[in-house]
Image (cartoon, rainbow, N blue to C red; front, side, top):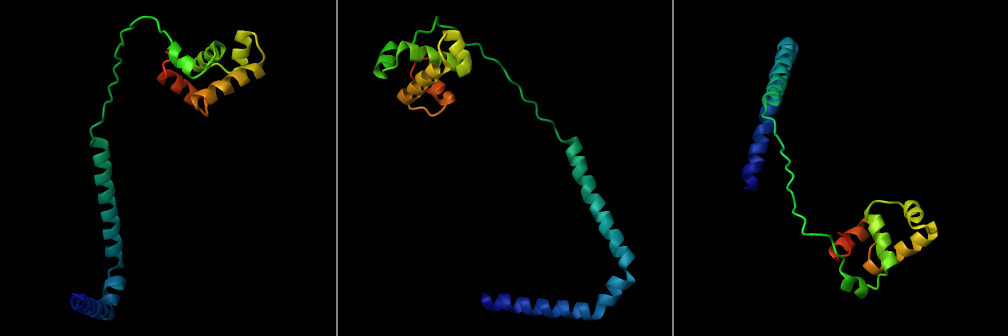
Length: 148
Protein backbone atom coordinates (compact mmCIF):
# COMPACT_ATOMS: atom_id res chain seq x y z
CA UNK A 1 0.00 0.00 0.00
CA UNK A 2 2.80 2.39 0.88
CA UNK A 3 4.50 1.50 -2.35
CA UNK A 4 1.45 2.47 -4.40
CA UNK A 5 1.06 5.78 -2.58
CA UNK A 6 4.73 6.56 -3.08
CA UNK A 7 4.52 5.63 -6.76
CA UNK A 8 1.43 7.80 -7.38
CA UNK A 9 3.00 10.70 -5.54
CA UNK A 10 6.19 10.44 -7.56
CA UNK A 11 4.35 10.24 -10.87
CA UNK A 12 2.09 13.15 -9.89
CA UNK A 13 5.11 15.24 -8.95
CA UNK A 14 6.81 14.53 -12.25
CA UNK A 15 3.65 15.41 -14.20
CA UNK A 16 3.26 18.69 -12.31
CA UNK A 17 6.89 19.60 -12.93
CA UNK A 18 6.51 18.84 -16.67
CA UNK A 19 3.33 20.91 -16.88
CA UNK A 20 4.94 23.88 -15.17
CA UNK A 21 8.02 23.61 -17.34
CA UNK A 22 6.20 23.46 -20.70
CA UNK A 23 2.98 25.40 -20.37
CA UNK A 24 3.37 27.94 -17.59
CA UNK A 25 4.03 30.81 -19.96
CA UNK A 26 1.24 29.74 -22.30
CA UNK A 27 -1.44 29.33 -19.62
CA UNK A 28 -0.76 32.22 -17.32
CA UNK A 29 0.69 34.93 -19.51
CA UNK A 30 -1.07 34.29 -22.81
CA UNK A 31 -4.53 33.50 -21.36
CA UNK A 32 -4.62 35.55 -18.17
CA UNK A 33 -7.73 37.49 -19.22
CA UNK A 34 -9.63 34.26 -19.92
CA UNK A 35 -8.58 32.78 -16.57
CA UNK A 36 -9.71 35.87 -14.65
CA UNK A 37 -12.96 35.97 -16.63
CA UNK A 38 -13.62 32.31 -15.83
CA UNK A 39 -12.93 32.84 -12.12
CA UNK A 40 -15.29 35.82 -12.01
CA UNK A 41 -17.97 33.85 -13.91
CA UNK A 42 -17.64 30.91 -11.50
CA UNK A 43 -17.86 33.27 -8.50
CA UNK A 44 -21.04 34.90 -9.78
CA UNK A 45 -22.55 31.50 -10.65
CA UNK A 46 -21.96 30.20 -7.12
CA UNK A 47 -23.26 33.44 -5.61
CA UNK A 48 -26.36 33.32 -7.83
CA UNK A 49 -27.15 29.72 -6.90
CA UNK A 50 -26.71 30.46 -3.18
CA UNK A 51 -28.86 33.58 -3.34
CA UNK A 52 -31.55 31.77 -5.34
CA UNK A 53 -31.72 28.99 -2.76
CA UNK A 54 -31.91 31.50 0.08
CA UNK A 55 -34.70 33.53 -1.52
CA UNK A 56 -36.85 30.55 -2.55
CA UNK A 57 -36.42 28.52 0.65
CA UNK A 58 -39.62 27.58 2.47
CA UNK A 59 -40.10 29.60 5.62
CA UNK A 60 -40.75 27.71 8.82
CA UNK A 61 -43.80 28.69 10.80
CA UNK A 62 -43.77 28.18 14.53
CA UNK A 63 -47.18 27.76 16.12
CA UNK A 64 -47.48 28.35 19.84
CA UNK A 65 -50.62 27.19 21.57
CA UNK A 66 -51.68 27.93 25.07
CA UNK A 67 -53.14 24.95 26.82
CA UNK A 68 -55.46 25.85 29.68
CA UNK A 69 -54.74 24.00 32.89
CA UNK A 70 -57.82 23.43 34.96
CA UNK A 71 -57.52 24.85 38.46
CA UNK A 72 -58.09 22.17 41.06
CA UNK A 73 -58.74 24.68 43.78
CA UNK A 74 -56.71 26.95 46.00
CA UNK A 75 -53.09 25.95 46.61
CA UNK A 76 -52.37 24.54 50.05
CA UNK A 77 -48.70 24.38 51.06
CA UNK A 78 -47.34 21.08 52.35
CA UNK A 79 -47.13 21.72 56.10
CA UNK A 80 -45.41 18.41 56.83
CA UNK A 81 -42.60 19.19 54.38
CA UNK A 82 -42.28 22.71 55.83
CA UNK A 83 -41.93 21.29 59.34
CA UNK A 84 -39.45 18.65 58.18
CA UNK A 85 -37.29 21.37 56.64
CA UNK A 86 -37.71 23.50 59.81
CA UNK A 87 -38.92 26.50 57.80
CA UNK A 88 -40.84 29.02 59.89
CA UNK A 89 -44.02 30.66 58.68
CA UNK A 90 -42.24 34.00 58.31
CA UNK A 91 -39.49 32.38 56.18
CA UNK A 92 -42.17 30.78 54.02
CA UNK A 93 -43.87 34.16 53.66
CA UNK A 94 -40.59 35.70 52.51
CA UNK A 95 -40.04 32.81 50.09
CA UNK A 96 -43.48 33.45 48.61
CA UNK A 97 -42.64 37.14 48.12
CA UNK A 98 -39.32 36.19 46.52
CA UNK A 99 -41.29 33.95 44.15
CA UNK A 100 -43.42 36.97 43.21
CA UNK A 101 -40.23 38.70 42.08
CA UNK A 102 -39.96 41.29 44.84
CA UNK A 103 -36.58 42.64 45.90
CA UNK A 104 -35.37 42.60 49.51
CA UNK A 105 -36.24 46.27 49.87
CA UNK A 106 -39.77 45.73 48.52
CA UNK A 107 -40.29 42.74 50.82
CA UNK A 108 -39.09 44.79 53.79
CA UNK A 109 -41.52 47.59 52.97
CA UNK A 110 -44.40 45.18 52.50
CA UNK A 111 -43.78 43.32 55.79
CA UNK A 112 -42.77 46.43 57.77
CA UNK A 113 -39.38 45.00 58.76
CA UNK A 114 -35.81 46.06 58.03
CA UNK A 115 -33.98 44.96 54.92
CA UNK A 116 -31.37 43.13 57.00
CA UNK A 117 -34.17 41.07 58.59
CA UNK A 118 -35.34 40.06 55.13
CA UNK A 119 -31.77 39.12 54.18
CA UNK A 120 -31.44 37.02 57.33
CA UNK A 121 -34.72 35.17 56.74
CA UNK A 122 -33.98 34.60 53.05
CA UNK A 123 -30.47 33.27 53.76
CA UNK A 124 -31.92 30.86 56.34
CA UNK A 125 -34.50 29.67 53.80
CA UNK A 126 -31.72 29.21 51.22
CA UNK A 127 -29.73 27.13 53.70
CA UNK A 128 -32.71 25.00 54.66
CA UNK A 129 -33.64 24.35 51.04
CA UNK A 130 -30.03 23.89 49.91
CA UNK A 131 -30.25 26.72 47.39
CA UNK A 132 -27.58 29.19 46.34
CA UNK A 133 -29.71 31.70 44.42
CA UNK A 134 -33.19 33.16 44.66
CA UNK A 135 -34.37 31.40 41.51
CA UNK A 136 -33.08 28.07 42.76
CA UNK A 137 -34.86 28.60 46.10
CA UNK A 138 -38.15 29.30 44.31
CA UNK A 139 -37.73 26.22 42.14
CA UNK A 140 -36.99 24.02 45.14
CA UNK A 141 -39.93 25.56 47.02
CA UNK A 142 -42.22 24.54 44.17
CA UNK A 143 -40.74 21.04 44.03
CA UNK A 144 -41.24 20.56 47.78
CA UNK A 145 -44.85 21.75 47.55
CA UNK A 146 -44.27 24.94 49.54
CA UNK A 147 -45.09 27.30 46.67
CA UNK A 148 -47.83 27.17 44.02
